[in-house]
Amino acid sequence: MTMKDLDEIILKARDFINGTSLNVVHELKDLKIYEEPLVCIADAADPLFLQLKNPDVVGPHHMIPEEWLPGAQTVISYFLPFTTRVRESNYTEGDPSTEWLYARIEGQICNNALCQYLLDEFVKNGVDAIAPSLDKRFKVIEKRSNWSERHAAYIAGLGTFNLSKSLITQKGCAGRFGSVIVNRKYEPTPRLYKDIYEYCNNCGACIDRCPPQAITAEGKDHTICSNFVDAVLKKYNPRYGCGKCQTDVPCEHCIP
Ligand code: SF4
Ligand code: SF4
Picture 1 (cartoon, protein in one colour):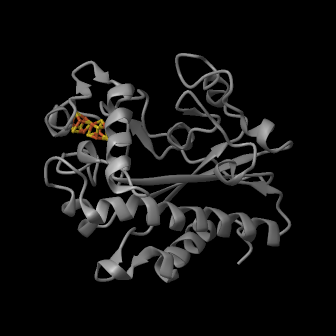
Picture 2 (cartoon, protein in one colour; picture 1 turned 45 degrees about the vertical axis):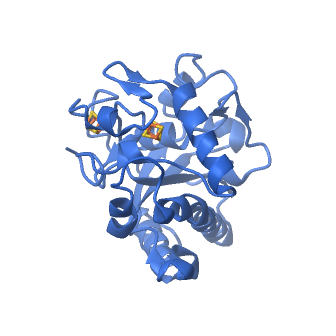
Picture 3 (cartoon, helix red, strand yellow; picture 1 turned 90 degrees about the horizontal axis):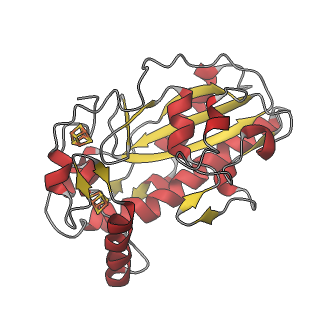
């Protein structure tokens, strides 16, 4: 397959996730981490990428696709939904479930492998490509990275933000994102929304789920959230996570 259109990219990504042993945690009774990915496409020249440099959005250090890859034409963005077993294990209150802790860490190793695989497939087919999250220029300044997977996903048409500052896709918000920037032209996916919070119904379920009460009707306090996740890391090092606001809520696995 030559990655000639979105269907071929989706097939490649699905085959990888279905076939890789990195998507299975053997020590947790063969826990499968991810379902098949959703994949969408953004025009690298979409003016929304420039808006991410606004301090109110991400910040001036956020790099546009052209800065990551001169001649960039397309951003491929994907979402890996967590499986029912991972999600439902985290329906408890308080600390994250063991399955969730593994899905965040071993799951990120699997996510990175998918990203690297797609990158290699493009390069093998003569397409210049880079993955910001795997690039040596990737950095995080004051808890904000210079490439936001969720914002790229929003621009690519994968979904909209919600009260807990996750992104709600057709398969909900519990999962992980990734992206690859390429210098081949693909048809962008239409964005089926107009407002950045369109898919959130403001039901407030995530407010009640959050252990340190980081979420209110006005939004999420990132400092309270990250302090809580830091405390989880101290306890479960090297694993960490939380995800209570993404589980046992209406936007967990669909658009509510
Ligand atoms: S639980 Fe309800 S209010 Fe919270 S993000 Fe999901 S849909 Fe929005
Ligand atoms: S990840 Fe946990 S601490 Fe952070 S907002 Fe969600 S529920 Fe609250």
